Image (cartoon, rainbow over all chains, first blue to last red; front, top):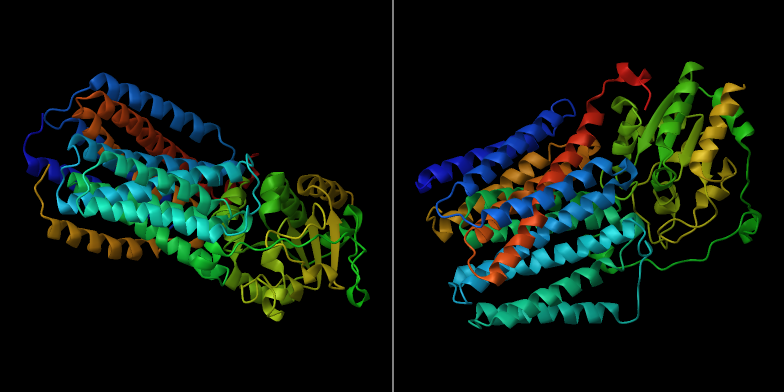
Length: 462
Length: 102
């Protein structure tokens, strides 16, 4: 077995290089898949090296644990539908955080609490962050899987209770660092951290999910990195920190795309507003106009340029394949079709891109917000499929709106707008969408998938 | 395990932060989901910690904790990798084979 620490260190360095190259290759969809393979090789090198360390035993448990984990991971990864991808990412993120916390805890346990100063700091950080990430990810999973309500769950005094829980965990952490060598303290710290993880994700939901998922991703990376300090393992420190940096950057990008601070997303759960039924809207006499698939088909068939604006509603209805088909039918008639992708459309960063890629939509048809916005003025029809807040003009015009200042897709600049929606329920932000009252807007109510299928038939009949 | 000092480890940590920001900022928006899932896979590196804990464990509590950590970390590694691969496979397709049915 490998007994020379330098050889071990060099092999871990190979793994680190593989991980960096893997991330580097993600800069283009062309090499990205090869990059993932390189990352995989790096992981195998790291695992192989660790297994070959002097004195490693308990082979039965190692193999048994690895077998169970591998089956769970493989079955989960292979069978999950693309529309369920956000919760899968949350789940795999959570288990990583849990593992990091457990590793840190067992180091404390083995040493009987008698650990050096920098080690206890790392143990406390890893247990704390790892547990928050584990519990938070599980709640995020449950919300996305709709095991619990995806809407924000709020109660009076929530921030006070949350702060008290976090304070409890931090106080225990400080006591441990200050020299309290008691195992119960670390157990209690983990308990508080788990509770905090649950409490801090519960009030966040729906459209804010991309921010939370990226943040939890960063947390698990940080926990892994802290575990690296506990074990004096550079590969853990570096790999964990790469993830920490990535998750942090994504979190900030997502928050920027909503023009909100991360703190506002996490602690400022939006209030809910009652929905307005079609035609009932009283103010300034404007009403919502409903339309039929046949009317929409005529508009689409004779348009020169159509921009599809997908949102979470498309994901829920699993309409991505039918949307692609509709686009193809239109293209055969000479219509120019593009897709407008808002950075926070869906429930995780890049959600719409993955769904449309699954449906074989060529990625050069997917336009980012800055690229597509100037094109709406030359667009005949903007077809909004299950997107809401990211199209709300109130973000530009109404300073009292909770989404004021959020960069949006300028669909209201198009000659006409067709909004496909299940009902008049407001979007996640719980606010009415001015767009629906615009004279150029018509609404096509119903399940997105049904509506798109009907549209395909109606366009073909033209 | 190598006997690196805390300062060296902190130096490595800080360099990794800058490297991480540098590399990640080049990832296009389109690939943000695979990026998350790919980094998800990479933090599966805690499996190294799980193996060390379990491999050197000699009391029941440590064995139990190590075993659970092993299961979780392996699920993280295997699941993270396959999900990423599945996603990236879709992105690889070129517009020319669009005709191929779902």
